[in-house]
Image (tube, rainbow, N blue to C red; front, side, top):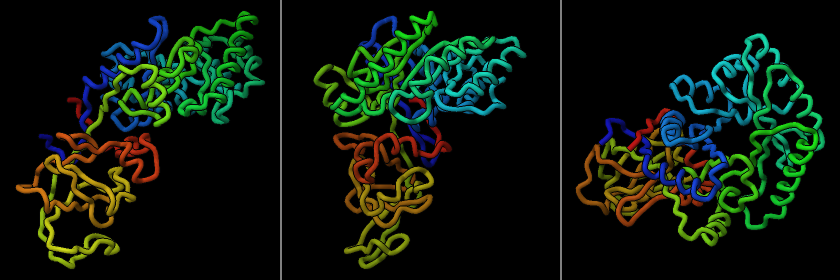
Length: 378
């Protein structure tokens, strides 16, 4: 039992299993980049990065310079790519720590070249190209000229060129196929220009499993590494293609009961008096609320596993507390563990179930678990 009042357990065997499932569907020459951005999708960036490094991940993908430097400060030596942004003040530290940097504007590329030259260290960059997501990236029409300019800058090595799919989680791949063609045409054009790109990459979790033509030199696996499907449509397509593929949820979120009380019929529970007891109840108070990442939209709707039985949340979820009706569960004591996300016996509460109840996606459910809550490898 943990000494914490709320904690997240990370199943290292499930994580390793999922990594190997992805290895089984890609060519041995294709590199594998687990994405550990946003606190490893809520799973714990340091803990997950350490496990993946030991498991032989080729790269780690992070969102910004802060995450990259944080991982390096923990003596994790696996190659890292910053996928989205970093500050000018971080460039020197990042290249000294052998972190690959995304570029999508020429001023930043020139600044990297200047700092790398002054430091006498070659900087590795990956050019991000916008083939249709209309997010970060050099516009496709400008990409060839941009990459040519970058290739002429001193002390810069173009280690990769990459793009990101906007719609690969859906069953209709019309738009995704257009993006694949655009990206492939760009790579052919660069080849004709005698510009060597060691690592072209495009595939996310869904694309990696759905189509080998998206693999190029490296795949970037995110949500599905953690045993969560990016969408129902994607899961159905991939299950047909790989019927034996099995992704295991990596995360279990637990807490301890901090108070138990008996309340009388007619009593109100929580802010706004949104719940009124229709009979005498036994309730448990838990040390989690919307600050901890338990969505307030689960008020009077969510369930918690208490001794393996689903028990309803009653009343509005508070900033740091919530209340659960445990009347139907015998022998519950203060200090007993309950499960917020996870499985016990035949019952389970998944990120997908919470996402459905709160009209969001499983990504948000796990990523929103407050980073101050300890992540414990089990």
